[in-house]
Length: 107
Image (cartoon, rainbow, N blue to C red; front, side, top):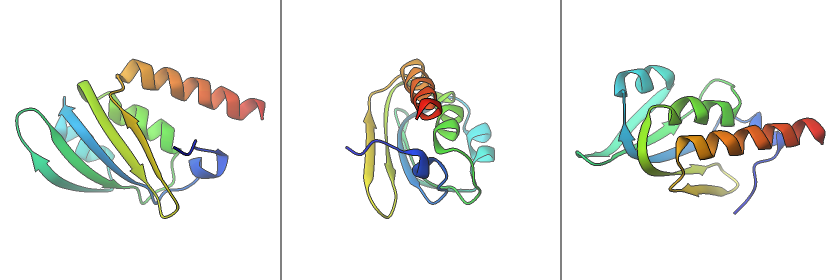
């Protein structure tokens, strides 16, 4: 697994696949530039997401994860590598993002 670095945070061409329950789909849809639903049932929603405007990737993930409930997984793809989190809860990911942002300030 590749760790995101400072250059990655400036990219906007990631594809993200979420598997999880969405708390408020309409808010989620309004946050995204391009959204394709791959599969939907009562227990999960799989989204393929492409960002077209620059925004820190990790900040965007925290925004989106606020709308997810319970266990979920997601994968981040770019042209160079695949990056995957499995079964994170929103709080755990938010903590990881905060720690990662602090690390970036130090380096």
